[in-house]
Amino acid sequence: MEDYYKALGVSLHAGKEEIREAYKEKAKIYNPDNEDTRKQFILINHAYEILTDDQKRIKYDQEYILSKQQDVTGVKRRKGATFSYLLNGALVFALIGVWYSNQNHNSVLEKRYGKLEQVYKDLKSTLSDVQDENITLTQKNSDLQSQLDKMPVVAASTSEETGADGIDIGVSQEDVRRIMGTPSSVTKLGSTEIWNYGLSSVTFSNSKVDGWRNFDNNLKLK
Image (cartoon, rainbow, N blue to C red):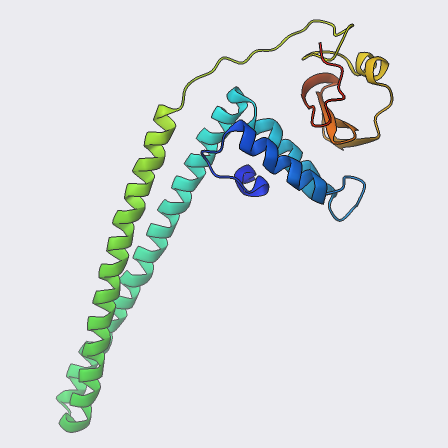
């Protein structure tokens, strides 16, 4: 899944004001009319929309933390399987060394066996380090789950009122165009459209207002 926190350069605990400032800085860098930065501009707009909406952010954070837990579990499984394979391989080499020692190659094979024994000890030490790391990752999983459990549930608020006198949730594109005039640029992503008025913008979902960013204080809000 997309990492919206990484896209805006903020932490999981960032507040709305910090997210707003981070978005403003990114918006100055990425130009929606530039093909090279268009996708990044869409990404940070989507990130800002999700992370500044309490209900949407709660849902995203739940999926985000779950994906991090799955990543950690995958790392533990891969590391555990890799070192188990290495330990088994070391044991096979040790047995080969014993067999050769019975073939009257004592002097040479004792040195080889000594090296294999050292390799085996090194692998056991490495495995111990991995087990310690697994304990640390498990603790991080627990902390992430604890954070998820403490997140408040906020009811979503929407409005179907017609914004005849100003921009509001649910207002049609026709009303926004009548109120604000033609946007300086339009960015489309599926059923989502972003109308830009300088640094300010209005986001539409299925041709209805879904949110806005009034950075220039030029939007006529209801």
